Length: 173
Image (cartoon, helix red, strand yellow):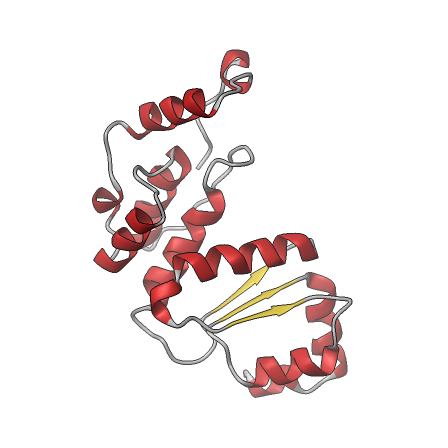
């Protein structure tokens, strides 16, 4: 789903109050309850201070829960990461055994940011996450993957090397 085109004025908002007003206006009064997420997910959002879903969350979460595929494209800080993390956690709660999702991200920094976001949003789930990135001990990462965490967050290069150089991926087939 593509976002509604932004005006030059909306890109130049600089204060937190302006951003909050903009976010609330974009929600059209909808809450996380209205998106179809599990009650525990909605409660977690409230506990983390997420009062109203952002525009990208409103547009992407309901169709994905219906089984449709979407593209969530929006600017930095718009809530894209929370949109897909909430969806993954919502589904993971229904089937908590074994590896549930592989999130591939282009940078190590973003991999750690994603892990932090998933840990915060999934704090009530006892979520097991493995971050698989270059520059870290590959043997330890391979052992972590064999333990079958719920969520693997990885950079493409490290996944490629592990797949090529180890038998890890045979365990998952």
